[in-house]
Image (cartoon, rainbow, N blue to C red; front, top):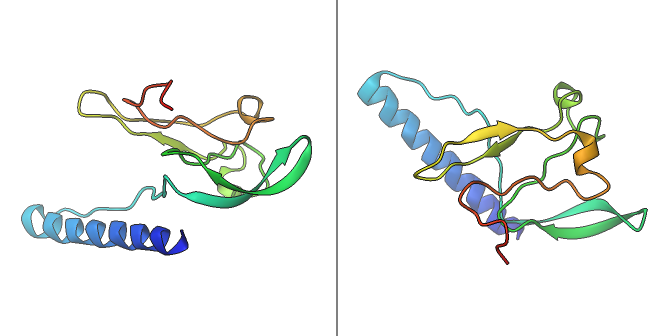
Length: 123
């Protein structure tokens, strides 16, 4: 799984750099990375199971983790607002962003929306 994650990250970095080169050459523009997040991976994390912190391998099936405000794993700059969630659009819908207050995330595990165009009842 780690090798696949590394491959995905390297691929995104190479595609981003190629896009930067083309934008610079054709339009004289620059491209800054705003946010890079892996999705559709299984990750080792600690979550509450029956009130007990338990180390688990979690797969969110196309979604990414979003930590609520005040979570100890958040960097200081996100502590008050929580981790941002980018909600990708589809060919016919807009993209957006959001964050989740702690009352909407816990006691369940921090799992935000998976993106537009994904049926809510998808197995």
